Image (cartoon, rainbow, N blue to C red; front, top):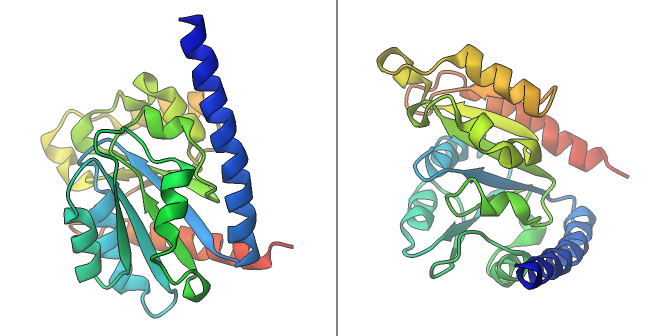
Length: 222
């Protein structure tokens, strides 16, 4: 067990060093990079499909898609109007910096304002790997239940904003928003939580405003 821990620490350390270098490259381009994390089916791709047409006139955006297999999500966001390149991990539960760096060659980075990295659906492994992003966006859906912050605190601690998705399901679930918010606040005080439904559009404007502020902050950075 001790040897396994040492190897894991070395892998994380190497990834962190590579992530720091990648972050400097993104900063030089004034490119806002967001790491989207969630359980499978929480709505990451649907969020991008909703975001693409709404902000197409304001920002130039592209996507790196991470999945074990298939290009289905990449195909969806391409149909929504976003350039996308696919990473298939073949069984790996998360993306890392070498994977992301290889995928960057397929994207017009100098022509972008926002790069979304849609991580593999998982609330454990992705939270441990820095991808050089400016912010981690964590999606948690009403359909998953209100206990996810307590069960997966590392992911919520890593997040810079939480999107509570599929709120149109609230009337037909036992999801307690107050319990969810209390648990989030215990894990990371001040972490913003944005309730929304991409299906109905309710609450998505708050997400768009968050993106606008994030882009403005990146452009104003020294």
